[in-house]
Length: 419
Ligand code: PLP
Image 1 (tube, rainbow, N blue to C red):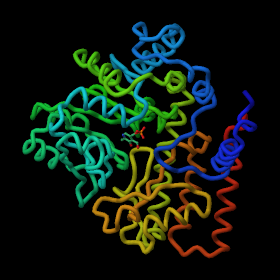
Image 2 (cartoon, rainbow, N blue to C red; image 1 turned 120 degrees about the vertical axis):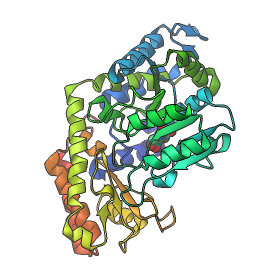
Image 3 (cartoon, rainbow, N blue to C red; image 1 turned 60 degrees about the vertical axis):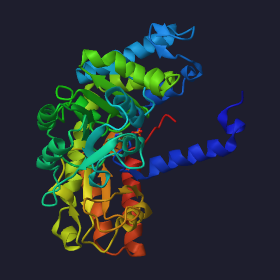
Image 4 (spheres, rainbow, N blue to C red; image 1 turned 90 degrees about the vertical axis):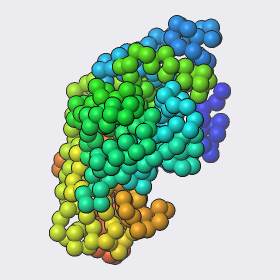
């Protein structure tokens, strides 16, 4: 029972190196965040030892009296936070949560209608190689080429034409609010159920900075580790009493075995923290920060390098940078920012002429830096640094200067000082 450093120095050293990387660089991957220490303590606890197949009060194992308390807390907190009448906190991930919903609402071969992956949708919304595209007849809607907004006329037309059993609203890369009410109207007009996957925006929804999908959707799924800032995992919400039991049995025994009670405990902690003023302030800085970055990336100098911000701005925690008219492709832009200490991911933009592995876009998110304490001033600085790095060739001198500014910003906001 020796400590990790002795039991496994290779893993220990890699974790230490990762901590240093997280501390010394600026993390701007839109789906990432820094879980609070309390969340990581719960996740790293003795709960990892416990089998608890079933649900609180109805387990298939003895000794579940304490994990029952924890899972009940997680469920009640999710219901309170998102104002929903049912919650399941057992999905191991967002993908599992979506699979459980599809297992509940669909039979193999049924038609689903979701946002195209290359227009910002997620793999689990019907991508060809994913279970959702293999088990179901997946039809995709798109954004309009004129303004990059989801084309609700197309959603309605495809719904009328294909009569899907399930419409999926949600995204992994889209900078605007979706019109949940209109999705509801279209779903009702063809007798489809509506799933809203709020994985990316759950933290903003919890802080009332983004409209909630709960009143409009039959079922809402989410991850718990993106804007919500908890451990990696998923959750399911519904107000439909007739679906509660069916969703539970789709998760267990349908898809999963024993729940990860250590992760569920960490979800409970994150959901408690998400009800605090401190969390709401962090979400306000997340949103304001994305708007500040978008503004800095819309300057004349950036535009003259053929770089623009998709849709001209953002209503959420991320900015999509359009490099279709730039000499830099997505891969080069990602590498260039990496070389000065800023981590982002390249991302296909809609109507992208370059192949997906190269792509013509960047997805830049603010949740992790907001968790470190960044406010409007720092985000404007970061936006300037990104603008400078992308809009002109980077000589070694300029790269060194930008690297210095990044390192200074990181040092001003120490990450996990208690570790
Ligand atoms: N749904 C959406 C909209 C996502 O963006 C993601 C993650 O990228 C997921 C689901 C899947 O979550 P996970 O990676 O936990 O399976």
